[in-house]
Length: 107
Image 1: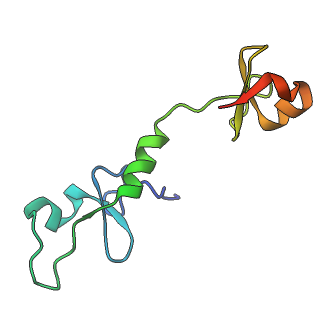
Image 2 (image 1 turned 120 degrees about the vertical axis):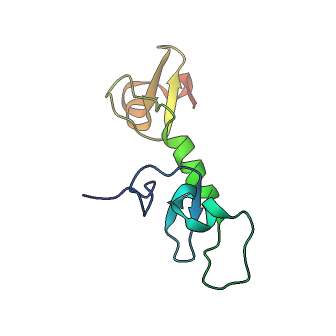
């Protein structure tokens, strides 16, 4: 089974309050002993740093957003445009092949 980069390396669930390890794996804050027991770093080199993974947080937030589907080909592609004449979202290919460029605006 392929693991998503948005899954915790420890529990294999979608990351919750992601933290990044020195090895660059991301884990949930509850899966890290240092994150769940202490809010400050000790001088002990064996303790794991508890650095928030801001990129993973952003990717998780944006992965839950709904994507625009092209009204012509039913595909989710980027960039998407909006045809003001038809009042529908169109992908780049459909905009160029079936609609005049001057009637669409970039989304």
